[in-house]
Image (cartoon, rainbow, N blue to C red; front, side, top):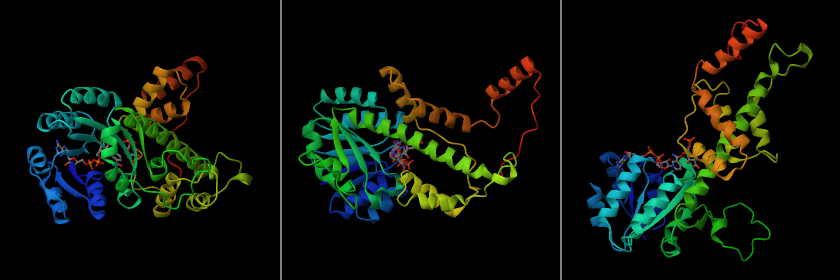
Length: 330
Ligand SMILES: NC(=O)c1ccc[n+]([C@@H]2O[C@H](COP(=O)([O-])OP(=O)(O)OC[C@H]3O[C@@H](n4cnc5c(N)ncnc54)[C@H](O)[C@@H]3O)[C@@H](O)[C@H]2O)c1
Ligand SMILES: O=C(O)[C@H](O)[C@@H](O)[C@H](O)[C@H](O)COP(=O)(O)O
């Protein structure tokens, strides 16, 4: 099948590569001509603009947008909407806010253009492992794009089949679902990322406690100098907390247990915040996910005004002086 790809960064470039490997064809555009040239050398057709990309696609056309979410994606979807015709399809595979999808799908529907939102997970490993996809849109469009999704998905692989799923939609165990109408794909991906924050935070805190088990504050007879790399490794094998995030943790600790290459400033791209907004709207308690999000905010402050205020109040009511700040653990 033929696909137009706009945005050839860490995700879009490898998605195209995985499609080319499986016999699909691609017309590719990025504002950076160097990445366009690189993919053209691997067999894609280069486009020099959105107009050129649309002109090089055969009808009914499919254009996959894999750009930074927000304004850039919004402008590109609007521009494509002006260039494409009825029965063409726009896919947004980035981490867009699901309410934007609902609006865009409604606007494009008026022109007969399909809009499909694809929450895409797998990061830079997707080329080899495949991408887990959570898809929203009209059945007609999603079914038409099935050859693309089938190639991009991981497939059954070595994961044992879940008992009791016979007769259910086989796409889920291949690594993709049609979640529902437009917006639902990104809604599911949003919650996936909210969970991602919580899981990451749980591992981070657990390993931090292990690391401080030799702290001078612990009575001497029960201090432990633990090998975190080995603990991460052994937990990967048969333990209850094994997971891909733990695999990545083990790899990071094997490389440099002191994590010297990181400052610990943890960004967020929005999905965690939207997850909490959804929880509030639904009145669903999301204590772990909220606290993981707030911990990221705290990670960006060397000195916290709130913490200073805590110290000031404590000193005020009890005369408690701040002890000298302890340095980082060895
Ligand atoms: N990196 C990940 O692990 C990951 C995983 C899943 C989803 N996503 C989402 O996928 C989308 C793309 O992520 P990425 O990691 O590939 O980003 P990236 O920054 O690696 O790549 C973005 C690409 O878009 C190009 N670009 C920017 N503005 C453009 C414009 N106006 N027109 C054409 N090209 C333009 C850039 O030159 C770059 O090549 C984002 O929405 C992101 O949230 C990322
Ligand atoms: O499932 C995935 O492949 C990741 O979740 C992916 O979507 C990406 O790495 C996030 O955008 C990072 O999100 P934050 O910047 O919010 O941590």
